[in-house]
Image (cartoon, rainbow, N blue to C red; front, side, top):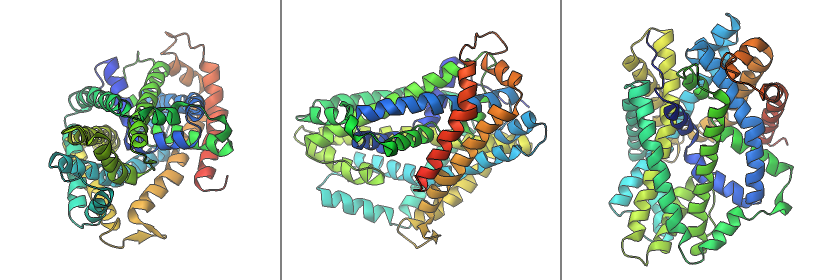
Length: 449
């Protein structure tokens, strides 16, 4: 079976970076950084990327590229039939659940993009808040927009690795970056904007604590999609001459840059109108529409254009993430059940759509709950607090302790064609440092530390 592969190095970086860049870069990183010491937090975050993010990425790259197979098959090949295949199944399950509930929020972004074009989200703060509450609790609209987003993702996936994923990434990622830069420039030119820049970038070491370190570790972990089997699946499409360490570094750099730029887009505008931005969905669906309207309202049509650009940015960021999550399951069904790619894509599309429907309805239209959480929050809690950390931990243990050291070294050095001077550092990180970091993240997410 011709699995396909990425056709260029830039395609590898943009596609894999796209899997990491998502809505969390916009609504979680800026707020977390601003509240935890600004540039001081960013410096710690970069350190966490170096000790956890990049080694974790390289480990999943090694599994995927060596096996040249979907996540489940990759672990099976390297473990020679031992139960490690379960790690791949866990990643596939996790990514499919995330795709289902993530599509709900992505659908909100799509609705707000069209509402911005129609001029429906312009108004005072109370109007904007009521608009979101009314829309999110509607039993039909959020569900339909979520399914539409999954179908858009499906249309990319069925075109294959080069014709779909790589081509879409080469288009979406540059557009996303251009939109972000335009919004950063516009935001930083507002009166009083430098207060927001200072809030984000001025280091405040007095705020640093063990809790801030754990927040930075968690942000690095979730931002780079560790534990979803995405990196493993994408690496199975890498060529044998791809420098895994360099690619991981480039992807981490892009992801971090976009997160910081998102802060430079949000905080200057918020400070300009005297609003303290919060985090989560309320930031992008309630707070920021009002901020943009106030900040740019004095300039004819400026608020309208900025609102459209912002929600277009969110749609593109969400799409690059949903594409990667969809591909994980699609590759699995294509290879494990000998289905055509189109049929496999439909399997994931249907499963994700069912999850999306019930999650969308649980937000406000109906009381659909599990263990005291709405179904939407339950899926988020289950994946973030349990499935992702467990999957990432097992991946590190597998690469660090189970796979023969020579196999790991050969993949790290591309069969000895690269010098691999940092191999010893990498191996120590994946064997000792990464598992400790993941355990700390797991305990912190549960509120134990």
